[in-house]
Image (cartoon, rainbow, N blue to C red; front, side, top):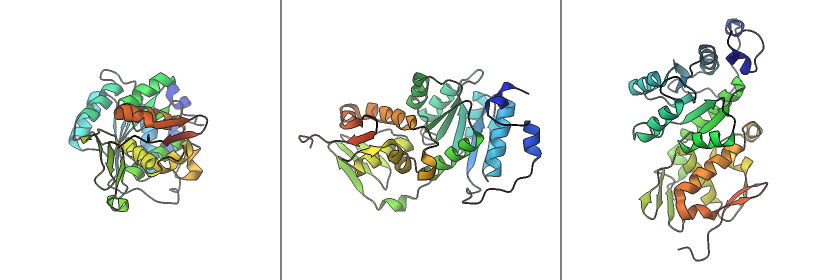
Amino acid sequence: MSNGIAALELSGSFSGIMAKKKTPPVGARPSESERVLVVEDEPDIAALIAYQLTREGYRVETANTGTEALGAVSREVPDLVVLDRMLPGLSGDEVLASLKGEAATRTIPVLVLTAKREQEDRIEGFELGADDYLTKPFSPRELVLRVRAILRRTKEPAAKSGGRVLRAGPVSLDVNSHQALLDGEELNLTPTEFRLLRSLLESKGRTQSRQQLLERAWSVDSHLSDRIQTRTVDMHVRRLRAKLGEVGEWIETIRGFGYRLRIPEDAT
């Protein structure tokens, strides 16, 4: 058995896990139409992830190379991609850049998996457009929770927005159409960045903790937010600031707590 399974912090063999019949967890089930593409070159890990997601009710397809992944996306656009960065040949970073570079696939949420644990490595993944980042070793249950949270926030009904337009200086955000403008030019934001900006605009001048942002922008339940690394928020704030240019400086870091959007008095 490969070292990959041991890295997943599981006891017992993978075959033993597959052989056990478990009652599906109680609670909301995903729609049968929700399709997840798992891109992982270690067969045992790919099969385990697919098993965990399938028993949660998702339709799962696997690919073990970047080329296979792009082929799978071209055949049927998935609702979410679980993507390993370290792939043979076409790397996970190249796959992510390709997905985010095409209009037809730009909004597909991507959960990146990697053995790289350094902060700069995580930043690279987020800068390429990843919606979330999970380092190995990881708990399969945590992966399922993150997938569920990502899909829940991306499927949020537009009707809940009430057609509001939020404004701060040169920034305007149409909650209904999911369009953000800076000086009249459309901002190329990922769905997660859009929700983060919306949360900051809705609470202008008020400080929000990282956990509060996880619950609002990431749609993570309060009893689950402590299981998701708050560093995820920091990475997304860094990306959002870069895309906002000078306006990005309005997002203030409140050391040891979180962030707030503070609009200068002379801003129009």
